[in-house]
Length: 112
Length: 111
Image 1 (spheres, helix red, strand yellow):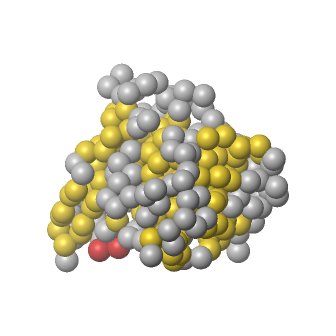
Image 2 (cartoon, rainbow over the protein chains, first blue to last red):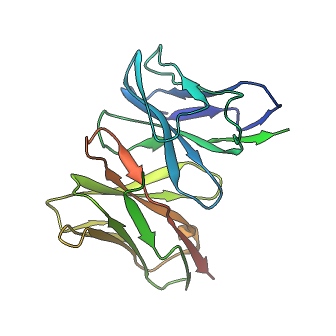
Image 3 (cartoon, rainbow over the protein chains, first blue to last red):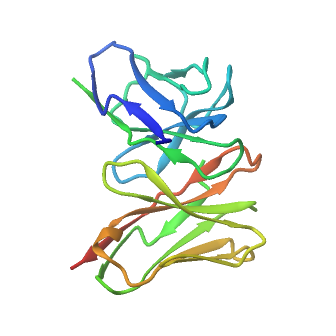
């Protein structure tokens, strides 16, 4: 079954801690994306990558970092510099460009 | 940067009725997409309409696009309880390298 797997489903962060959210896809897509969704809101783009070993900042990249060492994987690190990290994080993939995106089922991050 | 804005923000209708949601955007586009999100889940792509298309159908879904008014509508006919979800429009950005989502319409279907 082709799809996107995000883990963990729930994550708790302590003050001053970095946490990493996992995103893996087996759809053979070149492009991958990370979004943040706050309650009752739309999606805001954090980072995106159109190809392995390359990525670009989205609208709200401050306090976040990513890597794209493999085509299948696009992990997101929420650093201690992100002062309001509580949100629902969604990962997506697509063929490059403004094409239909396939989404994972998200990771809900909360502060302890 | 938000390109699309959905209207209304929330909609509650009786099962069996039709639901119409609208999306307006600011700049010219190559395509417009609609997605559905069930509570606590990821988004699911519903339909893509290109800028040279005026109407597209998929099952009980009908999407229209009016590029002169910079607006699109999503019609769900004969609504069912399972249609309860948030619906988002998304348009490509000026570089056509990614899409930008609107804030969504929350649709509730009453039994």
